[in-house]
Length: 152
Image (cartoon, rainbow, N blue to C red; front, side, top):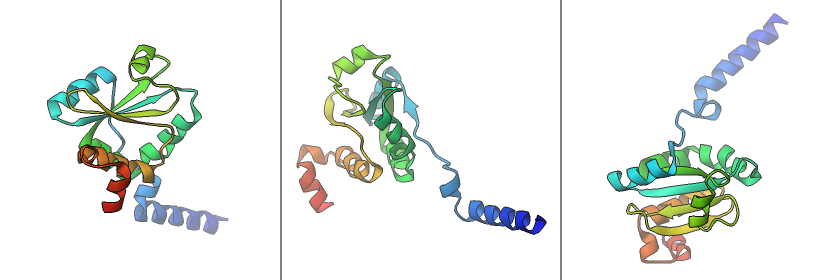
C-alpha cells in the first residue's frame, strides 16, 4: 500500500513540475469595471474588450472557464487590450447603451470610446484569438474579417 502511495506522489510531482501550465495557470486576465477600463484605454492608448455577462448565463460561464483561461487569450488580452467585464443584470443601462440582446456579448471599443464592433454569443479560444488580432492590428479598417483570415 505504501508503494502505491509513493508511486502516486512521485507521478503527481513529475506531472506538476513537467507540465505546470496544465495544472496551474500563472496568469489571468486583468478585468476592469467599465469606468476604470474606459479611462485606462484612453490613458494607455489601448482598445477595450468588453464582455457582457450574467451569473445565470451558461455560455458566459463556459467562456470564463474555457476561453478566458486559455494562455494565449490571457496573454494577448493583457498585452494588447484593456479587458472589461460588465454584469448586464446589474448594469442594465450600460447593456442598453451597447444594445445587448443576448449573452454573452463581446464588444470592441477604440481608445477614444468609439464602438468598433461586437461579436455576440459564445466564442471559443481558437476563434477569439484571430478576432483579437483583427481588431488590435486595425485590419478591420482595411478589410473584412474573412479576407483577414485568408492573409493571416
